[in-house]
Image 1 (cartoon, rainbow, N blue to C red):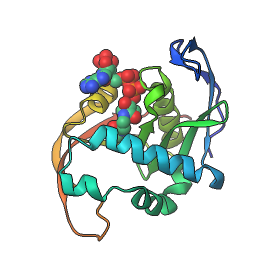
Image 2: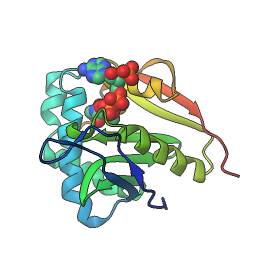
Image 3: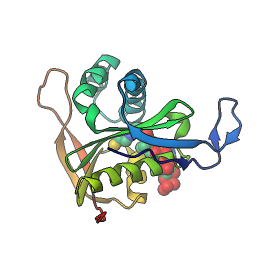
Length: 185
Ligand SMILES: CC(C)(COP(=O)(O)OP(=O)(O)OC[C@H]1O[C@@H](n2cnc3c(N)ncnc32)[C@H](O)[C@@H]1OP(=O)(O)O)[C@@H](O)C(=O)NCCC(=O)NCCS
């Protein structure tokens, strides 16, 4: 379990009014009532990061229903970032990997992603993971820059399997980022 851990977004996060503000954010485990918000966030942010990168037929298959279907077995490893009752981001950890990592458009560039990555790394470290992995589709330049800046090392590109609704085998060039996590002992 991840403890809720308050943090402060950097000033500049746009409030509903459009004015800059600082807002307290907590990182906590996924709850069943988060489901609709996480599915919507995953769908929208996935398309932002990958819509221009993956082949059109793959993009067309990534519907809201497809993300709803995928979330079920991954809920146990899902960590959400919540501020003022709203889900602003989520990460899913699986094995030694940060398997999914998404932030709403309005919270990008605010520092929330850095704090959420830190929380996800802590979760992996608590599970005893030392050698952690993040996969990042080639062409997702913003995510690539973000992980590199956060101290993750790009160990190279490989043809990695991508999710398909019918289970067919399909791959895409993917950067494999690695990071050695500090022990929490
Ligand atoms: C990836 C993501 C979590 C990063 O969070 P973020 O708040 O946007 O990250 P930051 O703004 O702190 O850092 C992004 C970096 O990309 C740069 N950047 C901004 N827009 C960019 C663009 N259109 N193309 C390339 N780089 C860009 C930023 O300048 C920054 O680099 P720098 O630190 O060298 O200046 C967030 O953008 C996101 O959710 N994207 C959509 C979903 C996604 O792609 N998830 C990752 C799947 S592997």
